Image 1 (tube, one colour):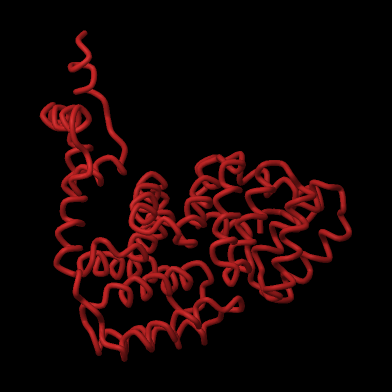
Image 2 (image 1 turned 180 degrees about the vertical axis):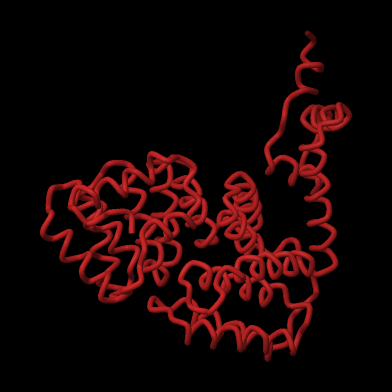
Amino acid sequence: MAKKDRDSKKHFATEEWADLANSQVTGDRELAMRLHLNTGCKECADLFALWRRVGEAAQREAGYQPPDSAVRHVRRAFAILAEPEKSRQTFEQSITYFTKALEYDPNYSQAYACLGFAHIFDYQNRWTDDPDNSLPLAKQYARQALEKDPNESLARCTSAMVASFEKDLDRAKSEIDLALSLNPSLALAHSLRGSNRTYSGQPLEAIPEIELAMRLDPASSPQFLHFLGMAYLLAGKYETAAAVLRQRIVLVPRTDFSRAILASALGRLGEFEEARRVWGELKEINPNYAFAEHVGRLPFRREEDVERIAGGLREARLLNFQ
């Protein structure tokens, strides 16, 4: 088979289609990519079309600036969401501010993305009377954010989180890759890439991404530490997992799931009394906590990863799957 024929059948990465759409590819490489498009590959044609739309939107939005009043409300609300200790009260406050921002500017993509972000927190933490409705609401806001500005990296992150909780890790990965193509130093996107790898059964590959997120945004480390501890646990590095999760609990004293993960690590280490003490703290904080229900909402691709967590709790005699 001639080299040109082989090249025409080769798939290309997301970043390469972005470069082609932005006229950054020339010569033989450009020819190979255009030959590939001519083969009718729908996946690559869709990526190329997406990046052309992103470029067109970037040109249209180059001079756009949301009103200062809208920006102030989004910053205030995002600061509330970024607090380590979250609650129904902080959720409702953030919703008020994000909604107010959209009153000032109905085209403000970040405000829609942040509304989706807030509703994902509710879906996870079960604050409202109908938390399951928060996931479709988050999906709606993510879609609106992307309609307003398809090159808004935070909107891509919100869309990735929605996809994750819908247990579509491949779509989540695509959105994360897009977010990082738009903003390579976005800590949230690196943390999401780490979490995506953890849930996909690649905890060792997740760790460097989460650590990078912590270096890029030290203020968000209390949030990222949970995912770092879980990655270490699923990689079988129980002592490190326990140390990371203890640090997380110091910074976020009322966390429940981090305590569940810590209790599992301690169970694996044979520290059964300490595991039971940590579990007791968890039940004091959240008497209705149910491990099976919580872990069932998480997008673990491999059943053995759920079992690794559950097994540590079982060794400490903490789990009858409730």
